[in-house]
Length: 76
Image (cartoon, rainbow, N blue to C red; front, top):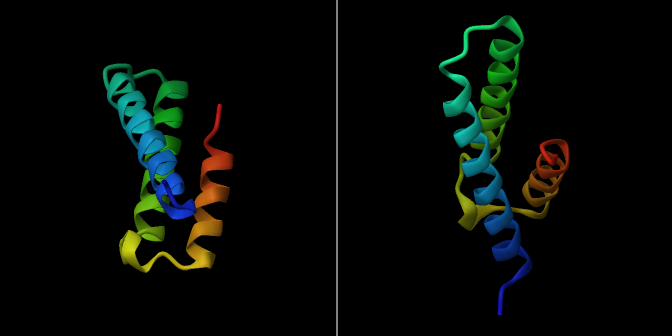
């Protein structure tokens, strides 16, 4: 059975993969609005990396709250 943290990890990793795929698809387009969107995706991924800098093993309740907020901001 998945724990709450395991479920969160699965959702975060799926969203990370989705955002990376979107960024990759946008790299070939040089229009200004696409560049802005790509930069926003990159900023979101950097924010995720900073939040998880200590890894999943040390994810406190505060980190889990930040990750849930990150997922909410990046849901479509």
